[in-house]
Length: 302
Image 1 (cartoon, rainbow, N blue to C red):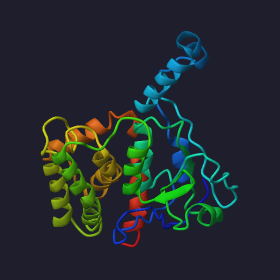
Image 2 (tube, rainbow, N blue to C red):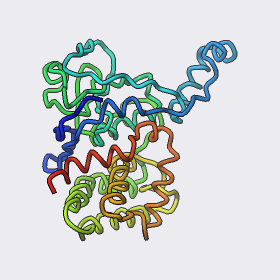
Image 3 (cartoon, rainbow, N blue to C red):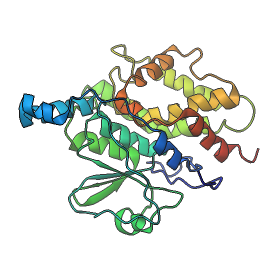
């Protein structure tokens, strides 16, 4: 792989403009080649159509997509030399970066709802981004963004709610008033959580703010007893936190020699349950590369 710049603004879209930005070294090309999905359990399409008929085959395929068992071939990154897709042609497109945690949120819900055939992934090389992305698609020039119904929307937390409410598939936002209220509280806390944890990257030890942030997560996971997730059952809240805990866990093990799940049994169980979710697993990066990205951004000059 060609040498890469040591630092690059990832411009990941986030709802809070005061939140800590992720300035990430680009490992996109390597990650793309390393992401592999589990072998699909779907029988050959022609046999399905013969045995079930087109209507039933479509239902079966949608169910398997929602379960995350469809083997999806990831498209290559688009850079400054790439041509623009035919924007606003009726195709729904999700513009992402393969290792941006904010974009990963939206990628996860797309997979969880079985929308792989409804929402096309368009991965952008943010280190060498195409000019047409800002000019034709999203003037903020960030990811993620969603092109749908001749409009482009951004901001990861807004987008996971939008996809949940505007597309088919099981709803991942609670109807129960108590859970709904708690969900909004937890979604609002995500930026505070990220800032607190990132503040401890430099210096010795884990720091009081980061420790308190992980304790908050442990307490939150203890509120409902009808399942191992934040609201008991899997929801948008789990999707909002997963990409960041996915990075923080190996980072603290490697850099701080601190295990964020030690003494936190609820967080331990949550991570185990998330790792059983095939739709989420299909979006995960290699832990070592994710750690290296954070090291280059936050520890390169220490």
